[in-house]
Length: 403
Image (tube, rainbow, N blue to C red; front, side):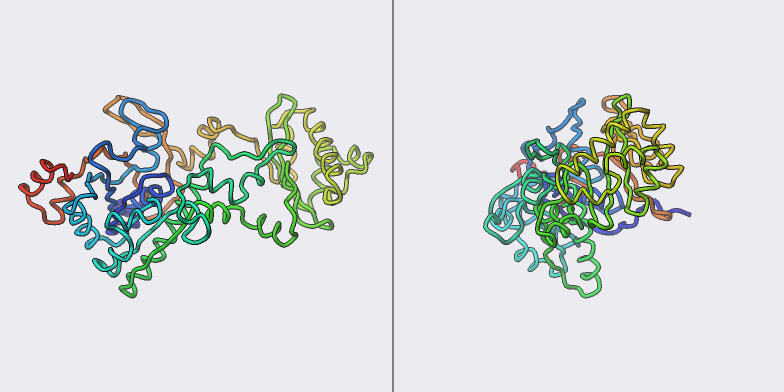
């Protein structure tokens, strides 16, 4: 029998997070059954409630990053607001924030202060540049992570200016790494009773996203080949690249050094490449001109038939290949839909069923449960009562605009 409480059921989390990298780690935890309390300002709440596509009172940005959490409004500039937060932290296992450096300490929820209240607390702290370095005290966004960590070159097009992408890859990578790091610290805290501060950053996460490609660039002390991923060595090269077909529809393929010649032969490209002295992929390492000749010749050959034709040939030869999706095409892709990576949710307030992210995990016994994001202050009374405040006290908090 499956347990619908989720694998993180029983874990209590309090967050003072707003931006994507600071909220998504705890949204994942809520998906997986944790109780997550999101602290928001009484006047307006998280500004991301009004970001992205707005349908009725729902924001695509806020829904994506905050579903399943509980909203508590709290004026943290007041002594009573800080006192409420501290009481919540005393009963929690995880606390998360992504404020500008030193702001958390100023508002009464820095790590050193919360550690005194709850020595076992796991404190997740997300910043733009990381806790050390010359820009540690500066604020930043996803664009900072992409720009500083080398993402812009990795996805650049030869001859065009470097630019950051529209997808928030630094934010999302930081969120995923924060999610894992905080849970790792939680295991340690549950074993030893000792909590700790876990710090992640947009720059550090985006740099990690570059993986072995970055390691190779550092070892070679030269940039990777852009325009296509031609990697490995001069003697044992590989390629991962996209080409347009006769209808201008793109396909992607990846071929290692062992399969380069068999792939060309299967496609019927080998003789043409050999005639032009381009059958040795390794010459791409010799010069930019040779690399461009290989890519342009392949492009002209792929442009002679449909991508379905080429993909069928490549897959028959056991060569990795697929069609290239736009974002909207991806949202309807069977491999995404069938695995529940995209889902649908009915919103009765606006009488609409909207597409949303599904879950990237499949748990055989404790599947995640996808909920909606909370209304501002929706759980004020529920949360405050759960930590011992009376009806009169809660009423007083409302009158004094503490909540």
